[in-house]
Image 1 (spheres, rainbow, N blue to C red):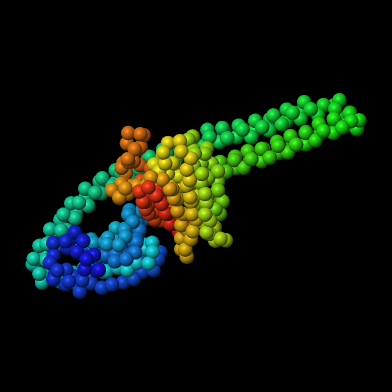
Image 2 (cartoon, rainbow, N blue to C red):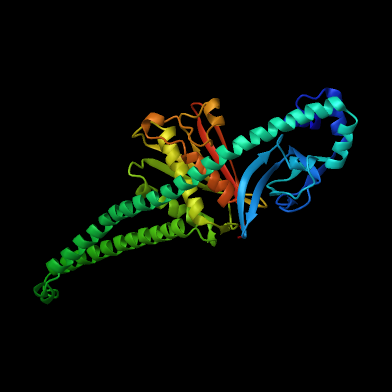
Length: 398
């Protein structure tokens, strides 16, 4: 397994089996626990790492802020500049799950190259090509990331505006009913009627109707109050993006209650499967998680089901020792294998002629991996539906 992993590294792709085996024999293996720092920005670079099993987050630290550069999984490698120079690490790496690495040290690697001129030639060719590719990719990725971040900010403000209009419309109904009830009371419970209360049964019946109207007013005013409270919580979180400690299930209930207000054409039935038990207190950024879930629900409505159909989305809440897991599942048309590979790529869309920008899932990926410091995976079967699973730490720290 290690030999195959090393073979897929661009520097070593042209080496013979014997040369690859020499490299494998030169290095050693090491295991890291979840959420463990592999190395920190500024550390001396002694080794290159190949991920045999697991997943890591590569991030840059500046002014107390962590900027995620990439999320790497099995078969990927990092820290390769350690093979070229003896300089400090340019970024930090932390494990997201339990990881098993193959480590290749600089000193041992250089000694190996000194004994093999053909290997030196092959490696230098691979290094040159890798550096050239990295330079090109850096420019493209930087431009795409900036565009995604700008679009995410625009989308967040657009979503707030849509919710303002939608909530205003939703509030009109209960307030209108309450207004009609109040009018009925004022017209029915006149001074003359009050004087007759003790004289006949008609007056008693009228008072009973007044009591029913009062109950109707109370129920609808409470409904309006809940809507306004949920809207206030979510809109403030969307704008401030502050670190909070909240009940994860209550946040999800608020998001679902306001989804019809966020989407003018909402026609989904949303079911929640809650497997959290009493472990549901999350310290994180509710505003970012709200945007992620609203985008995923909207994506299911737009892509999974025919226009104007009434369909279902299921949201499953789960946990493990380190993370909360939120899975959003639809039961629609599914995604073919080629499209599934590109789903998180910026500007890739199957709805180009129907208003799609190709940024929705790229924004979701950026928010999950960067702001929530988590991971996101998507699976799909044609004709059976699509599932998006996001994992994020139970306790985020600034």
